Image (cartoon, rainbow, N blue to C red):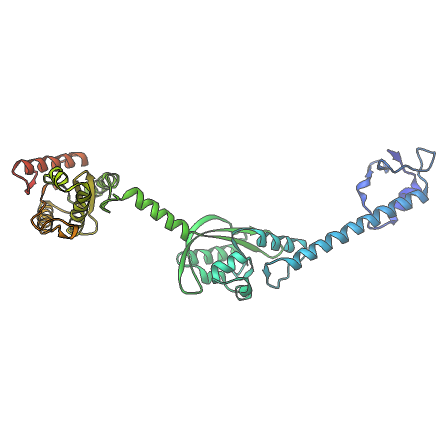
Length: 394
């Protein structure tokens, strides 16, 4: 590096819009140094002095280069803004920040809108237009300028308005992590979505809102839950659901001082039925009996499940001994009335069940498992009495 003379230093201060990255200054001593590229060499033979003509030419070249670079960048920004698919409302904001935000909104692969501090939609990409208006990008202008709050349902709508009010009283960014909510669509329908809000710290506050449609995922989840919780043959709850529901209902009823009953049902001589008519007919028989049991439940809070093989079980919250007995009698009546001609069997074919039930009323059982064991014991007594019987645990 070479030290500049005072004449060269004065020329530096007179040249405007020069790229000063090539200069290193020492404010304490007043000396200024200049760094040269590999192909730049001062013509002077004096290593401590730069010729004025060389300095002027070198600075001019750098100035022209910087201005050309700035013009190219501006042209690219204008081209990107002209070709973007984002619809942007007129705003006081301008420059590269707004152009970059527009590009971000357009290229993100999820529904995204940008709103101002009053909730007016300023930008929307094609995914947002498709989701909120259920139409293509040509209708984007009808989305711009709308109030974002009009799409919100309670209590999210009131919560959002409260956030805006608090931000005006005490300025702070309105950010929140993804949260599930429900939106009102333009066609009057509602959809479940996940929504997140991000504050953009610009001269006029803007907020980016990303919206994910959860309808497909909810439907898939419900289908998976059904497969995991339902017996595929009878469409009743499976053993896993029965065990979980018994535990939950037991805890709730005990805490509230309400009764709870368990009823276990077993098909009489079902092995003989399978041997005589085949396992395919046995499956059809199970389906008919399951439908009869489901139709006999006293209320929607009760759970009917296939307990295993030819056994079924009921969890009956808020049901005492008399209600459990009445339910067992109705099940017995409905099953005895079944005919099997619709599945190709003779009119003489009939099937019966044996049932046992137990109820927790006055604290005689200490655990849910003890209640289940009592109902199972009552079932075996019913079978020992000659089948097609109902027995209760005393």
